[in-house]
Image 1 (tube, rainbow, N blue to C red):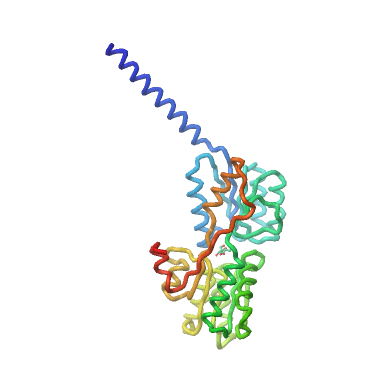
Image 2 (tube, rainbow, N blue to C red; image 1 turned 45 degrees about the vertical axis):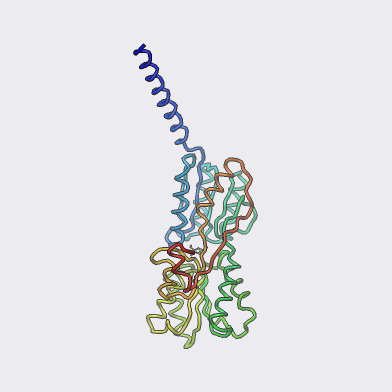
Length: 315
Ligand code: FRU
């Protein structure tokens, strides 16, 4: 009697062990390979996107994530995507450096039957499965309206563009022009391509400061360039004479929200990276669910009044 109940217990324990081992093995084996082609991992906003993608992917053992970094080179990104196609990834995620040079290879992946999620920057084709990103035109428009408010409808503006071949740069510019269109007293006096980079923003602003005695506002199409411009103006003691507006609104030390709190920027706009939702959407596609062709992420403007509450999570 005693022996048989021990045997029962032993069998039960073994059965549990076997079944949980089995489950674990099944869950751990990646079923899908996702290739993520990042245009440049060196910028803070891109680092934040990569982190989101990696931590969301890590929650799903059925995914194996491969990440490539094109380091702002269109040619390199084309070959990164070519490699993913040859490797036979089950899904491609891409944030394209510039639209035109990347369109062909994205179409090639799509035509080869690979579902494609385009994140943040667009391509010039509708051969993709899903686009995820915020509405850059709207953000630009709100930035323009905010500029008009700060300037009371009159002033001289320097615009520092992102990479001109990338769609957010064009859309943010168009939106900004729309935002200031009712204020003929607002003039763009200098506008240059800062390639989304802080150091370029800084040197463009150094030139602008040499050329113009009076600058009232700088619209940097992202926070790093706006902060670079602020630093250039501060170096020559002119930062207090003008306003600075950026976009991205990253939390954390060096980020745009802190820059607003520190008085370097007068406003920024949170531009969500979309990394987490991209992975979640990828999973849906891989499991055969239907997803919308466009997923628009919402943005929030951050001004000095609400920046602190935002960082502390109260807002
Ligand atoms: C990073 C970045 C962001 C910007 C986005 C636009 O590469 O420049 O700062 O908001 O890309 O695509």
